Amino acid sequence: MAIEVNESVELSPEIVLEEILALHRDIRVMSDDEILYGPLDRTGELFRKLDSLITMDIEEDAALKLLQKKELDPVFADLSRFRSLYTVRLETEHANEILESDSPWDALEKFLFYGNYLKLVRTESRGLGLSPGDRVAFLGSGPLPLTLIVFFRQHGIKSTGIEQDSSRANLSKRVLEKLGLSEAVTIINGNHFSLNGKGFALNPDTGIKALMIAAQAEPKKEILEHLLKVMPVGSRISCRIYEKGLMKLLNRNCLLDLPEGFEEHERVQPEPPVYNTVVFLEKKR
Image (cartoon, rainbow, N blue to C red):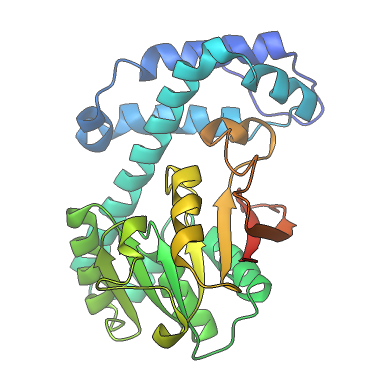
């Protein structure tokens, strides 16, 4: 069975669960390499089905009822793994298209989710109170650092991206060089523990105005606990999460309980085509 998204139809949790389990049967047997490098028609079809499923119009209570079923934890973990890896695949393939293009900026704008990033970055720039010439850090910048590219191109904001996978970090550096942005946007191969005074430290002397955490940067609880130890009082953070309907299955436990010492200032809900809620935090002590 395949559910068609239709806002006029109310779907019961039982019907949605049936669709989730059917999709999971196909996804659970796929290795990471199959998702990243296997036949595109197969993985693309599964991605579209998953995307349709998690963005369907479903009552919050019905979504919560499903997401609270502990026996479904392995199912949701597999679906989240698939979506995360397929997103990396999309970004990697598009990064290579940019490198091969004689018109790299035109190629960049053809990325499937480019419009999403324009709107999301505008929300973050306003929420963090940024101005042209400011610099931000971004944890989880990926193989195609669209957030950082858009920040500079649209808002004149410089940045440092942090990416833990070395091959993705190197690919993103090549893309930035191709676009002529190597001075405005720098990439560090590391993770949240790189924010610790050695090579890169989040403190007033660096000129970094705020830290952003990508939706796919995990584990968020560990990340926030570490940042609480190393960031100075008054530091600002924006954190992208999924919390609307079944999008929650991608990070169901995110920011349910903030580490003591952080204060939530604002939570901006997504508007199409954006999926991410943006949570703005400040370290108070």
